[in-house]
Image (tube, rainbow, N blue to C red; front, side):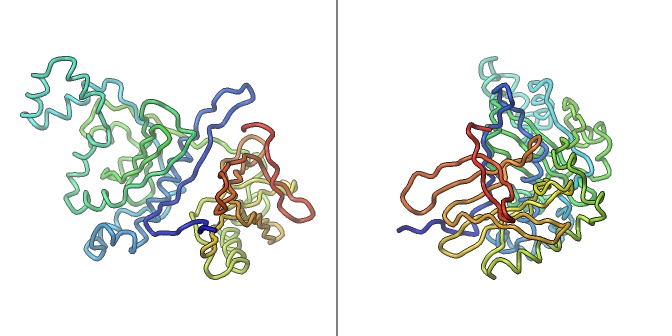
Length: 354
């Protein structure tokens, strides 16, 4: 029997999501806001992990940059904008004007070759001018802290962009491509976060259009917030982490900081849902649910199956059962949800794709 999984520091956490469908069978719009926050959270983890960074650069030489760049509050953005490019050709020409020789070459090209350059147009590449102002040290660090997340709900043929500002640290630009979201830090002063005009002026790309974006309201909100039940969210998270530490062996309990809120007990107070990866050799990802009202922790452990959180949608939380792993059998993904039966978590598969 071959090993089920190999853990390596070079591996980056990947959330695999399947396209969502509405009641009419049409593909639902991806939740760009939340996917972008997953990318930002991964970048936050990268910056904090010296072992990871040391594979790309001398960490000691970048201590000041790390302190100034890291947000430590990636899940609470102060402002988020979607960025669109109304006239890619004009924007590219504006960027090329900074280099007269490149602009001369551009003007000399026949229209069909200009079109080929436009196909290769990349907003992140044009934004390198903004990063260059911060200096070579920052550019080197930004390159090491790039993050990539695969998400199969992203099916658009054209790239789209979200820019996340935080109360401190550097903003993060997330690019959404086909099945992939990628993030990079961007050197823009934080005090510009409430002024799209100032952001565009600083970037030197006046052809951009920035539109404020708000997080989509989740089903967890309709279940009532933790504060409505006199429960402090940060205190509840701390208790959940403590219970996880008591439940899982010392070698386990690692993974992303992502969690979801959803009321599975039916008392109106939402529970905290989180994935916990643990083990050595036979590594698995379990679903844990913490009930802050009763200080109870429930674990769904499928042994050779993983349980991944997909999303909170309407009146349920969507869970993916993935496996079996390590037995030379085809690995499949089954979508469904979970419920409590006799104080135990039970996976309920869907009869059709969600």
